[in-house]
Length: 277
Image 1 (cartoon, rainbow, N blue to C red):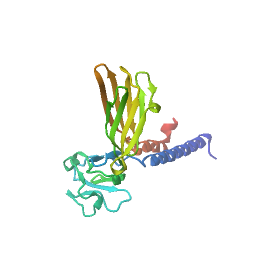
Image 2: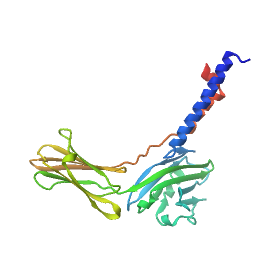
Image 3: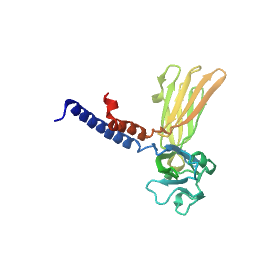
Image 4: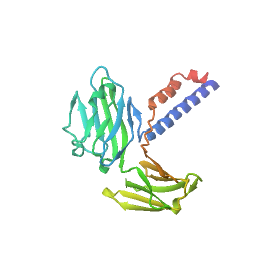
């Protein structure tokens, strides 16, 4: 018949196993975005239509041999880029990426396997996988690439009483807000915003706020899920003073490797006495 101590010991083992399972489930759900697995680290990216973007992938350098690098797009036949046995191998490359994908080959020895995509298009949006193989084994990780359009704001006073906030191109369709920074009041409902069709289903933004006053600071914000543009304006006796900024919202949080946490919990099972006493 089991003693009270043995019963308690078995209950604690069961609880620890349950916790490990719950944590493993949470981690499994989390890594549907970007994560770190087997020393391969990726970061979610945002690309702008028609420009270049870098898909970040780093790994622990291998001093013994050259590392093989394979970039794939999840759900797409063929690969995006393949570097194997010290040579570029593009025999199975998808036609979508022909002439548009490249590695920083001089940085591979330092653990940088990031991929550069040129002339990014909306159709490049998707989930990408970076796989590294060397004497340390094989490791891989995924990242999400979101593609859209965004541009900085220009602030002008089109009349003595009207302030204009304009931006050339946005996709997806953004929201526009106005604020009186001096008083802290929201002016959005008093403004007039037009979304003019632009190239590739994008929009040109023109937003006007009437009734501006001298020595009052106004702010216009244009943002969507990918970027945020901000324009500030102050009308004084010397004229209109403006400042603008454009921020890309990459959502590029990197998760720590789950293996360390799981190993710590597993050590409690293997050496329960340390936890009990």
